[in-house]
Length: 114
Image 1 (cartoon, helix red, strand yellow):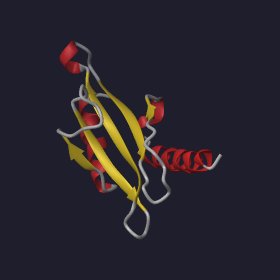
Image 2 (cartoon, helix red, strand yellow):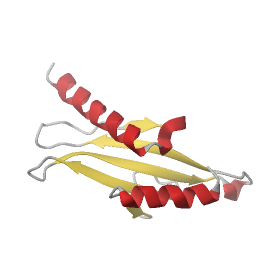
Image 3 (cartoon, one colour):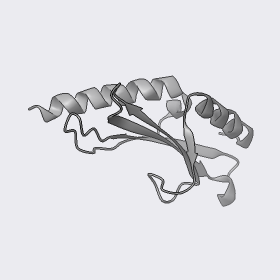
Image 4 (cartoon, one colour):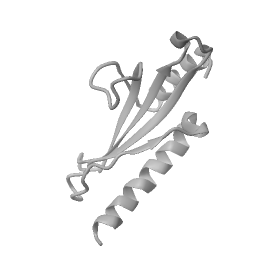
């Protein structure tokens, strides 16, 4: 991702309700992250999504990288934390990532019942 696209993508994330994190991140080594918690109507946590930005420019490359971590941590459903890490071409497709996160959460809930 070229640096100007990073700014555009950050704006898209902000418009969708994500918040920028530079501390207390899911990963230690990325440059910064954008985070959003998904909750039940009663306010209980279902899962979180972190878009992690990696500054490869400082290593002599012309681009940034983006990866995604999905963290289901629902106390309501007794779902323990299981991370899904995505380093895929469509990591910039926010809607697709959110659909995958929801599907992963539903899968974890089913798997825990067995």
